[in-house]
Amino acid sequence: MITLQRLILLAVVVVTGGAAPAVVAQNANVAPSSDCRDEQGLTYICGLSVPEDILAVGTTGFLLASGHRAPGHLYLIDPAARTQSELIHSAGFTLQHDTRAYPDCPGPVNLEAFDTHGLSLAETSPRHFSLYTTSHGEREAIEIYDLDLRGATPALTWKGCVLLQQDSYHNSVARLADGGFVTTRMRDKDFSGGRGAPVGITGHLIEWHPGGEPQPLAGTEMSLPNGIDVSRDERYIYVAAIGSQELVRFDRRTTPMTKRAVSVPIRPDNIHWASNGKLLTAGPNYVAPAVCTGAGCATGWSVLEVDPETLTFTRLGGADQTAAMQAVSSAMRVGEDIWVGSNDDRVAVFSLRP
Image (cartoon, rainbow, N blue to C red):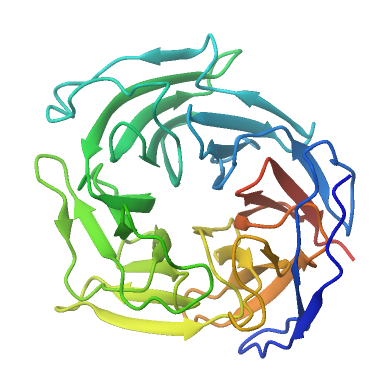
């Protein structure tokens, strides 16, 4: 087993709107993928290819996780059985370009030169879903799929794409009711900063509607805009700005859009609605770059539950810097359990039960 370095550094984080423990940072090597043992109240499902984002699949009881490395993957997770199955590299996957809906898409996704990153789902009929993903590789695009869980086995069909600015890196996407979307244009593709050090404004939001072109949204400039979701009535856009450690809410009914932001004690990655009407975000616990920085810096991580009206938040749980899973990126609630995605080889689950 790779041993953890002994250098341990302490940093206390003050939380507004919710309590969090003191944060411990440690320059560390992560445990090897063979170490999939339960720890710190966490149970792992291992052997995944960077399951960076995770979503509840309507009321089916399943979860969907992305695969943020080429060749891209999508994983259907059964929380009750604690098992996962592959959707793209499987007999149930097909390519079927809807040229009427996506006439500007140049053709099917290259299955050997793409990934699936941010996820957004809409249930179009019972157990039948429209799935949007941000994707990188041969092209920078929102890739669009049809997910059908009505049969005995899952069926996933690629339907088309919307090309984005090719010299940019887009992180997350939120589908809109008319089939359009908003996405986070996080940074330039060749940007190399952001590992804890301040980076200033790097990106903004992009909006697209069927029949149109992707358009930047004025007044949405942020530092590494990452996760994104919208309110049910689509009035508000919620964004996790990882570069400034903020949660940001934009009001689409005002011109220009008004903005409200709150600081959080993590580097917030994805942000999604939970079934209880709250938002969930997750990420590494924040410590100052002078304390711990770089690819080998492990700080532990937290999951925060956010009130969409007040933007106050509560820490639901997490792990310290010695846990095998670091680089946490998303969270989703299933009953009294919280499932957590990562930029690692695994997802984790912990219970909210006393």
